[in-house]
Amino acid sequence: MKLLLSPNVFQDEKSMVNPISLHDLLEQQELIPQAIISENLFDLSERLKFEVERDHDDFDEYVGAGFRLEGIPFAFMRYTGHPPGTYTLYLPADIKQLDQITGLVKQITSEFGVANSIQWQREDNPDL
Image 1: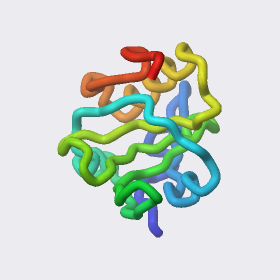
Image 2: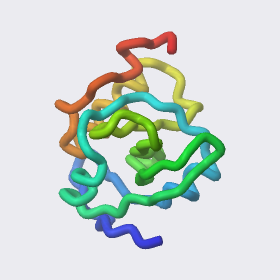
Image 3: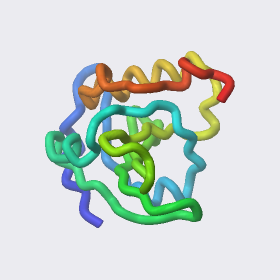
């Protein structure tokens, strides 16, 4: 698998985003959905020049991409059957505090320029 996103594409003084293998990430880490973005994942990947992986798990087929922000892994994924024109931001299951989740959602979506496209995030329904 080839990731096209340059390791420096999102770097600045405040944060750093690096592409990682989604397949490897999903094998190593349990991820939990934390936000839904109303945008096409392929449009985002074309704009920011990263490759979207296609695969399947025990649930269904999906497309997505894995990243690491300041050492924290996360993924953008869209499962078959999910609403078209959306994708989900997944964070590690061991991140449980709502304020930390909300901060990461804000930071990640800002880095990717999709903060205004958040359709839903965990802070909207913290008990889910």
